[in-house]
Amino acid sequence: MSDSLSKNLESNPLNRRDFIKSVSAIGVATAASGAQFAKAAIDTSKPAETAVKGLYESLTDSQRKEICFDWDHKDPNRGLLRTFVSNNWQITKPQIRSEYYSKKQQDIIHDIFKGLVNPEWYSKFLKQLKDDTNGKEWGADQSIAIFGKPGSGKFEFVLTGRHMTLRADGNSEESVAFGGPIFYGHAADTFNEGPDHKGNIFWPQALKANKVYQLLSDDQKKIALIEKAPAESAVEFKGKDGKFSGIPVNKLDASQKKELQGVLSGLIEPFRMDDQNEAMACLEKQGGLDSCNLSFYKQGDIGKDGVWDNWRLEGPSFVWYFRGSPHVHVWVNVADNSSIKLNAKG
Image 1: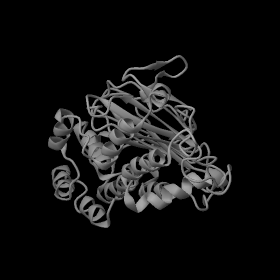
Image 2 (image 1 turned 30 degrees about the horizontal axis):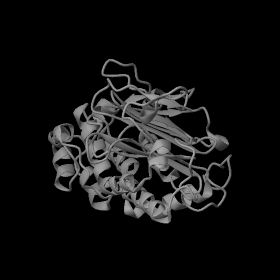
Image 3 (image 1 turned 180 degrees about the vertical axis):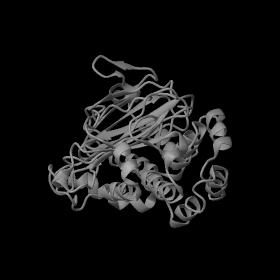
Image 4 (image 1 turned 135 degrees about the vertical axis):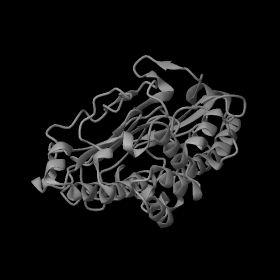
């Protein structure tokens, strides 16, 4: 997210109404726009979705049999395949950079990927993919699938590989952000990263969160710091009546909330603005940051330096779980209600 957005978010951290106004002023969705997301027709006009439609139309019959599925297709091992997420998986067998796809099709798939990320993060994602595939070029270790029929009803494009699950759905999934649960990660230098996570493109997100921890009082730190981390794929929604670990955000003071709003800005920043907007709209519908808890975990503290590698921001239907040990895995599950079921495997 831009510096101007961060400044707007930080201008008055205790007044949620002003917070929403400042976010809205630069295009981030409010609760009202969240309702628009829910009611909007399926949108194929966005660059990524336009490219998905073009890709679908270019596929041969044999390709469609291999990588295209009905909207509610269920896999014997993964359940509802469209909603599955994991830290390292191939949704279909054909790899993008292979003879299976024509050069034109490979370029279209690359355009879809490019359309799903913040342009300022495009080169960072290329670095992550290269690092995580032993130097292979983009697409050499990723695969795709299309659910439904782009241009004539609900559809979803899913891109998977090591440390990446991204989606484009044109708002076919009305109540969820990012088209469903997503995953991002990075093992920049080695599988077992050191305390400084050298070269890890996502580690700055954790440093922002740890800055919040340092602002907590001793009593607040006792509440926020948890001994054992949950399983990394445990990002299902708990709902309004769920039991949440860590410190409630509504117990933080003005300076602490200001810093946490910067954390939230950093979390959504890598993704395209449409997905940033929808994530914010979903969060606002459940009560905003004040509905969330912030947890840090002693378990997995690399180097025993008190810079917590594992932490989590969680609300009724908002989970952003940063697991930084032994390298970065981040699980994201965001919706505007908690009835959406998770389909994930660590």
